[in-house]
Length: 64
Image 1 (cartoon, one colour):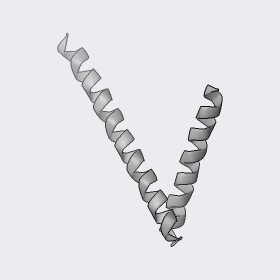
Image 2 (tube, one colour):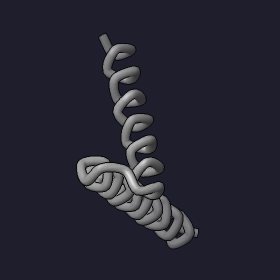
Image 3 (tube, helix red, strand yellow):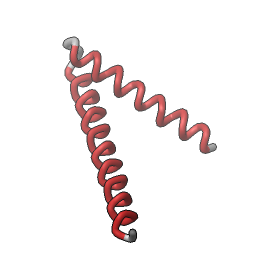
Image 4 (cartoon, one colour):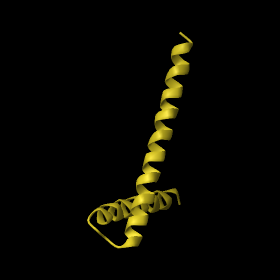
């Protein structure tokens, strides 16, 4: 079951990336929307990962 969820998430990510590329090349309006949502989601996840990683690094160095 978890494998199916992982494959589904990967398929959605790949489809979103394809829409973002298609939108860059002048695709239909819906491709622009899907592409923007995909890029924004990626930026938010990256920011969350950076803040989580940075927060953990600070707390471990404070203990030394």
